Length: 106
Image (cartoon, rainbow, N blue to C red):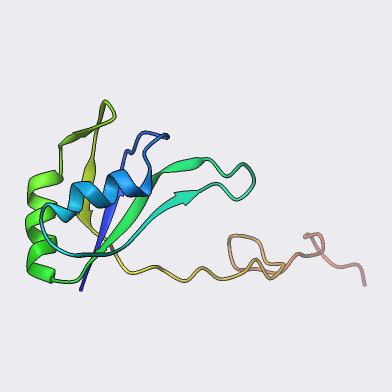
């Protein structure tokens, strides 16, 4: 199994178009173009899962830098998703919100 990232997609590219492009290199299990949660519009990137890793490597080599819909595609092996922690009320420095500084009054 090979999971492939496809970036710089034209916003009108369909999952069927992407599938057809990759099927020239082997069996495609799944195609998903990421969409904006609020508008439903394409976010300009997606993922293709190919059954055979070797076929996936061939597709990456052949399609990276190719044109689709007037745009140059960025095609490479997808990296594993990094889990993001929730906010949790701490600022970016890892400290809790807090009171003022200075000297205490005794």
